[in-house]
Amino acid sequence: MQIALWQIVALTLYAFLAINDIIHADVGLNRPLFAGFFAGLVMGDIGLGLAIGATLQLMVLGVGTYGGASMPDFMSAALIGTALSVIANEGMEFGIGLAVPVGMLLIQLDVFARFINTFIQHRADTYAKRCEIKKIERIHLLGLLTWGLSRALPVAICLIFGNEITQTLINIMPEWLMSGLKVAGGLLPAVGIAILLRYLPTKKYIAYMLLGFLLAAYLEIPMLGVAIAGVAFAVLVFERSGKQAAASGSLVNEGGMDEDE
Amino acid sequence: MSDKITAKDLRKVRYRWLFFGEASWNYEKMQGLGYCYSMIPVLKKLYPDKEDMKVALKTHTQFYNCHQEFTEIILGVDVAMEEKNGIKSMEAVSAVKTGLMGPLAGIGDTLFGVIANTIIFSIGSYMALQGNPLGILINLIWAAFRIVLRGWFIKAGYREGTKIVTSMGVAINRITEAASVLGLTVVGALIPTVVRANIPLVFESGEVTMELQGVIDQVMPALIPVLLVALVYWLLGRKKMSSSKAILIVIAISLVLGGFGILG
Image (cartoon, rainbow over all chains, first blue to last red; front, side, top):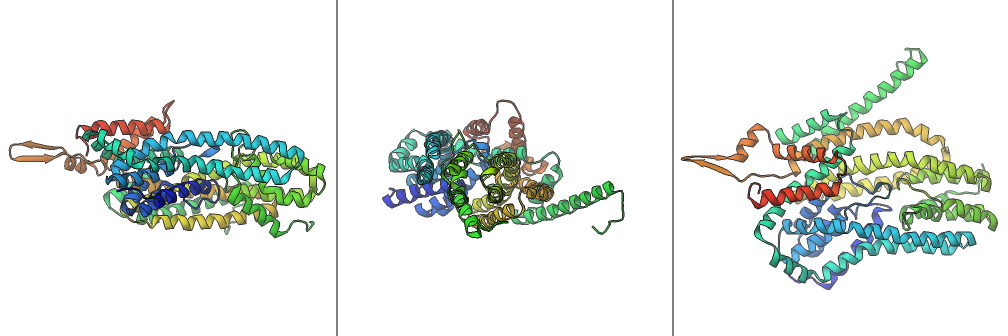
């Protein structure tokens, strides 16, 4: 199908808002899962958008821009991947195969936006010396534009040339590449999981990971059920650490009398 | 306590930071300008004198970077200090800002950035892969809670001053530990449910056909996903390995195995 103008506008505006959301109130617009859902809604295939968004989301579960590091822009990638899959009338493999490299290329624009904002900071430093408060406020807010455009521009360009891009891709994509991308869609969440295990205290609490695996793989309990078990484990750990804190406190006091604490 | 700063002023600072704080994030001073922008309503009230104002603006445009959702605590502490001691507090304010931003960033990134996102988006993505968009709703509830919490942070910081960090410290450590346990339980369940690797190979010898996948499943369900996660985990521990490189390696493996029809 052909992409309509309103669809391009809606997705571009979404990209502009989403990046400004995650660095502020963070209601979730910049998460690939949301972006995929929204693109699916706009393009008329929610299931496809959710599948693409969720797969990209699983690759960056616990990854954040801590300390100003850049991460793959899978929000824009989810928008582009979903829209172009619908245009091309292809499945989620096509969308993910497209979205992953796009998301990784877009890291450069994140770096660029943060760099451009350095000029804003310099202007503001000058205004601060002259005590021009209104100008400081205005130039600070100009940064919303830098951030927004760093996402909105690539999305708009990819969608405007969407028909041409997808035609070319379909023409040059061999069969083995498509089946390989399909496999990649299934395997890539493993990367996100492994990254998480590096961040979490995996070695200390590996028992709980094994329990989670057992519940899902052998007992086939759905994810929400496993999460309830996880909450139960968490409550137990929380209570135990409370008792430990109380116990070490009473050791310091050399009392043992304050049992009711 | 003077009554110069009202609840309304505090709210102005809060909403500036909540909606526009990181607009000018840059490599040189990171959130420095955004911090200053958020403090301006209070600065205007406290420093009618232009020379004082210049000093205050200079102090607050310095380097600053912290977790966005724990910055409210620092803003609250800062407002209380400046309200009490005015422009004389500037050195102390700088020290408190730089002293608190590191530890609070650590807590915020771990608790909210890694653990909470893991739990919420694991469940959300799992549901989405089954065609159910309700996971989005779970995150919206969590987001609303965080916005309310940030309002509480700035008030608590303002009321309790620097001692808030010691009083919160023990409780936050315990919460982080407990939340890690929940996170790891969910991640353990994630491996067999969202990583998909099917082996379509079938061996035939005479009348007997043997599906390789069935044999592997008898050893252990989700054996290939487990091995793959273990492999990437090991890779990520190596020097010069980044998550982007790991993604490319997994794509390369997929193209080879998928291209030859070993996985499908």
